[in-house]
Amino acid sequence: MSKIALITGATAGIGEACARLFAQQNYNLILLARRAERLESLAEKLSLEFGIEVKIFVVDVRDKEAVRQLETLPREWKKVDVLVNNAGLSRGLDPINSGDSEDWDVMIDTNIKGLLYVTKIVSNWMIQFGAGHIINMGSIAGKETYLNGNVYCATKYAVDSLNQAMRIDLLPHRIKVTGIHPGAVNTEFSEVRFKGDTERARKVYDGFEPLLAQDIAETIWFAVSRPPHVNINDMIVMPTAQANTTHLIREM
Ligand code: NDP
Ligand code: 8X3
Image 1 (cartoon, protein in one colour):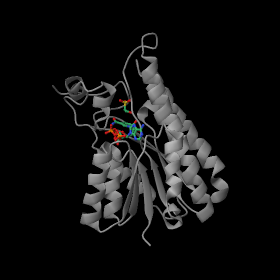
Image 2 (cartoon, rainbow, N blue to C red; image 1 turned 90 degrees about the horizontal axis):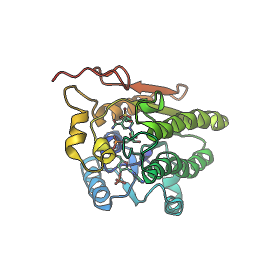
Image 3 (cartoon, rainbow, N blue to C red; image 1 turned 90 degrees about the vertical axis):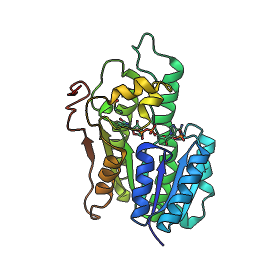
């Protein structure tokens, strides 16, 4: 049987690009996100184009019970070679004193708790089958904190910490764990952060060449395609025009 990749947040941006790239590499896919129509159409497209098998889960990673639906997969589908913990988001960009606490809940519940719920299930499968590779989507925001980034940054610092923790806890089982930390990637991320304000979202990427989702998918593929004795612990990937979260050259 072909290898299997489970990708969360596969309906857009980096997750969708990963789904396509793994399909090109002949992986069968387990794709998870909330938007059913997008998941269904992506699954259909990839299976037709690449002749692979795709299972989809219309699931909100914040919902622990819903995430447990993964356990309904037949045993042969639980031999997951690669888990890409990608589902995540930012909501708002406000100072700590005026941020919306509902936005904080959404970010914490998705970026930290959702990642944990999926990881608990899939890492147990990996232990049973004696192999696997977990890719955790961090961010440059999990390496440095920026103005008004507060809670989003905190969730990505948590991912960075969990990335290190998973590597230690899963070491006896030889499960690889890799953290990927991108700078600005032009996806739906800013539209989600600014709650549908497309003009404000567009301005984030004005005047410089941001990363594309495909750049990050290729970075992940590099980590996944190393030989068995090599693990890439961490990768920080930035647009050439961006040195860190605060230094970015725009040509307007
Ligand atoms: P997109 O908004 O384009 O994609 C986010 C994906 O996550 C969507 O497929 C969305 O699907 C899914 N998702 C969000 N919330 C949930 C949820 N509760 N349950 C299940 N799926 C969910 O953003 P990106 O591709 O840019 O983001 C992917 C990851 O990369 C995130 O973790 C983000 O923090 C990180 N990142 C992004 C950067 C950027 O500049 N774009 C830079 C650094 C890191 P649906 O809405 O259908 O559920
Ligand atoms: C997304 C990158 O710098 O907008 O994680 O936080 S940033």
